[in-house]
Amino acid sequence: MIQGIPLYYFLIVATIMFFVGVYGFLTRKNLITMLMSIELILNSVNINFVAFNRFLYPDTLHGHFFTLFIIAVAASEAAVAIAIIINIYRKFTNIDVEKVSEMKY
Amino acid sequence: MHITGAQIMFIIFSAVIIIFSILTVTSRRILRAATFLLFVLIATAGLYFMLNYQFLAAVQLALYAGGIIVLIIFSILLTSHISQKFEPISWKKSIFAALASVAGIIICLTTILNYNFKADSLAAIEIDMKIIGRSLLSYNKDGFVLPFEVISILLLAAMVASLVIAKKAKTKQQ
Image 1 (cartoon, each protein chain N blue to C red):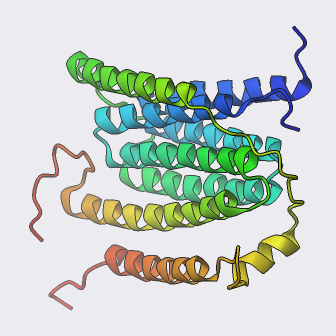
Image 2 (cartoon, chains in turn cyan, blue):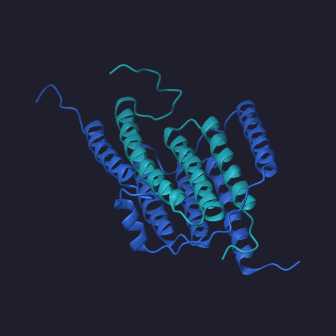
């Protein structure tokens, strides 16, 4: 199924996706859109792991399981981040990173 | 030049990934950005299907596309108006961020393309659910029982923590 597609193509797609996520993280001001940029970055790393596993070490499953664990970590990270965002919204009634500048409880 | 079906599928998936990820970080309506992110994640699941990791693609569809996107959309609906548009970002910030990203892409791609990956010609193992379940719970070579248990504790801790953070504080009057 992967004849005619070298490993480099997957790496190029993942690299572009990673730096698009970095661009979004640098320019966005809303907390939820920053969280979405982080999801893009994690996802591009997953593509890298899976492509390396399939092309370079096809007799093992290490990249496959590492990707599974990264997905689990991303899910728990998103849950905690959204809980924090909702709490911030309750206290400051917006979630703009430049308007929320107090750490006081 | 002869182009196979797999190559056409790969071109479609990677075009969807790149175009919609750029739209995700530049769209000024937040709900549309979340929808574009959903397309990116589904195309990534397509790449996993192309690499013959069916279980991983199913997990990607169920957890990322089904779970995280729904969570993000819920929190968008709770915290902002649907029709709200962001103010355009200042061109200075956008140009500097774009310069940093393009420089990063160029550095990474020159490094990657100059490295000679030695492709292994070993026979690929057949991946079915039995092998995945066995190696998740085995402690021998190629067993992953320790990270599996650590991840389960992490998930429990994250669940309890998000409940504790998000619950309403008791008011003084009560």
